[in-house]
Amino acid sequence: MISIYRFVLLLLSLILASSVSAQQTPALAGTLIVLNKSGNDASVIDLGSGELLATLATGRGPHELVITSDGRWAIGSDYNGGNSLTVIDVENLLVARTIDLSEYPFPHGLVLLPGEEQVMVTSEGGRRLVVVDFHSGQIVRSIDTSPNAAHMVALTGNGQRAYTSNGATNSVSVIDVPAGQQVQVIPVPARPEAITSNLAGDEIWVGSNDDGVVSVISARDASVLARWSDFDWPYRILLTNDERYAVMPDLGNEQLRVFDAQTKTELGKLDLNGMQPQGVTFYPDDRTLLLSLSGQNKVIAVDILTQEIVREYATGAAPDGIAYSPLVLRKSIDYQQ
Image 1 (cartoon, rainbow, N blue to C red):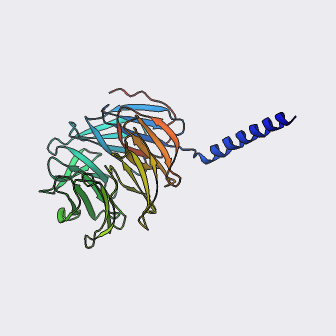
Image 2: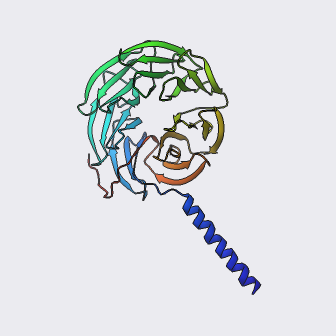
Image 3: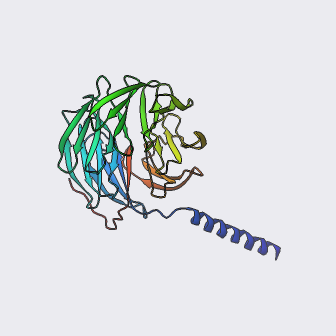
């Protein structure tokens, strides 16, 4: 009787643990778009089921990705050999157009401008920021960033200021967007890449690859508000929408690191050995991070407060740029170029 009693208790404990685990795992819904650098394509994935809905051809070397707030349009930069933008009609699971940027080579960093009818993209080869109407495919204007070759770009909430990371000149450019000119250049540690800003635009967060540091810089006087020096390759920096937390995938150390954005203190890290963490975007709950793993050809969903992996999704080859759409697309569609 004792052995049966113990067996029943063990069985009940396993059932309870399974139930608690299921309750803690979020029921994700919507659509995930992932750019695959080695595949020259985009994976479109249903978050609820994990089903691959479509694989869409992009230009060569797709890297960065932005999406409109309604989730209808995703725009990717074709950086390494593509010299183009790929515009994806998410709702209909097709490539709506490819925008030629051969006059502005090596397009990389992307932001949506207010109104979400235009994007601003860095042209690393042309040393310019280019404003493009992604619906018509027309180039609206360009902004000279010489002698700085901008790689990534961040935008304030009102769209008045843009900040670019300039790897070759170890600097951040401050761009007056309405005036269309570079108004300040701030020196930063060597080879900056990852960059973001808060909505107010008074904090610039920038990661420097050669020096392995992440700095928070005051946009008012260029003073350093915080700095962490134990990174290897701080690949991206992303603030939660409420600006309470910051996440930073460290590609070199293969870790995801989570910070309190207000107190500038580190909260925890997730080791991702052999996984090569890269692109980041948040689920609407503002606490579940979707993170592409280039070394594993998959995306993971991470609870940033506990640094626990809660879901996994298969992608194409070498996933990087990533975006979330609230659209739920229930029917699979095979895409034909």
